[in-house]
Image (tube, rainbow, N blue to C red; front, side):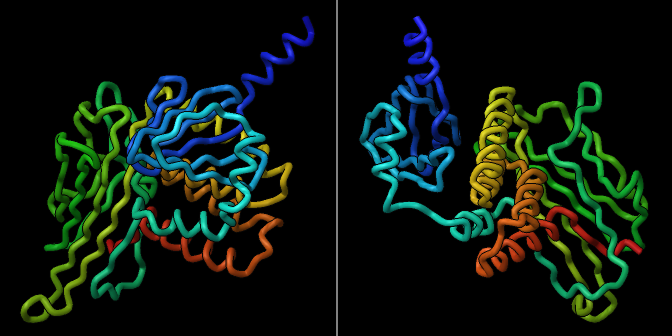
Length: 301
């Protein structure tokens, strides 16, 4: 009886995170979205033209599989395949930095006293609707002829495009959004600050443009991320290595949760286990870019 219970427990133990790179995949017949946890004994099916990356829990190793392939998840077998395709922390950090989930662009921006707007994304619920609010405060007056335009558009497929332009007569305040933001859908938020300037032909003008993606998580996606968080933070403590933190940041980036991406990038950057100068430089650059695009500083004063 004890032997049977031990076998069942072993079969259900989580051993890897499967991330879909291209195409699609299924685990025990259920379609994998962007990523999922895999347990010993489950069946992974990757069709022709698709590719997945398997990250082994409790290990630095990864396996990349291109379809068509159908296999039973066995950690010992995956470890044998993974020996030659392991990626280090610098590679994972570079992947995060190269994905444009948060970016910033400033043209002729020469102002002192920038105000960080810090939009709260995803928008929070306000009764039946959603509210786009800013951490910095409740109301921001704009100078004459200056404007801030915000826009929210779906990343995938068709859907409503939400937008509004704030001016001196219409100060920047929390913005009520329609309740038709879809759960599970990814959106791109854009904020553009425009200063027309005083010179001829627009010379002296400046523009600050910030973009950030966000996703309205489904209960299943939230559950997966919480489960992955528990596993990978445990790996970080056991392995005394920053790679699990960067894998966790990468997973949150897959689901457009940039606040958590930045949280675990900072945790890795401040870790006592970060000793490699190359990794330190890569993380510093990635964190700076994320901070600028998420804080969204503009010259309101």
